[in-house]
Length: 264
Image (cartoon, rainbow, N blue to C red; front, side, top):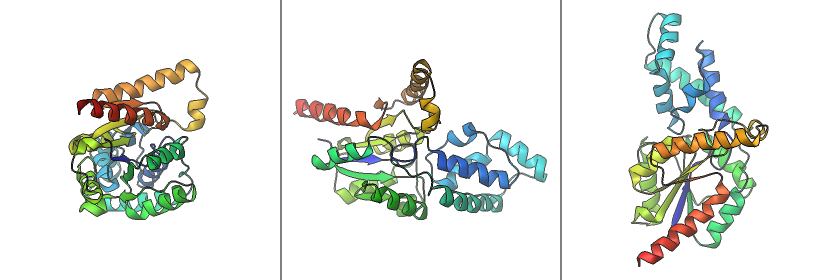
């Protein structure tokens, strides 16, 4: 039986489109005179933010811009300054972009009713999570356990350490009794590295990269095309299940429980 569900935050349960970190990354690099595209930012979304900045600094376009502006490649001090600016920006924007996504409370109630534990992992720091958690709690979403890379000696995604930490806290031995739900490929990689079931959410995901207004303004055909584009990305990394929205998670859990019952 499924004993626990581990959710991501931005793009999965809050912040439709995972907009806050994108804006903050752009602001931090803009302060350094470097222009980033959404694609530059989103390709490694979900990692611990220090690691994510390191990945961005290794992009060819970013290195070229940096060398052109500073006549040198970025060093560790540059990375630290970018990280500090990113933190300042994100702490500001998190206050604006922490609305729960549609269906979260209904799904959370189902999990509670069936005594399925709820935990979360994130690329945010504990300081960032305090803002997100407090807002989510006021709206009725209170996971039993919230884990950041700071709880596991900095070993954030895609390492499985945060999930292993949750398994130990929940006293769950079999990873197949856990479902990891996220909106990025790094979420899926984290789950796969831990041996748990993985579920990718399509609508409102960082992979889709659209705000709720932008998505709603698309025609039905355009929406379908966007959904299929994201599904193909999840399928390309062998995600166990891909769902349009968090509403569909209940069906996945019931399917898994039924399948596990038949094996017995």
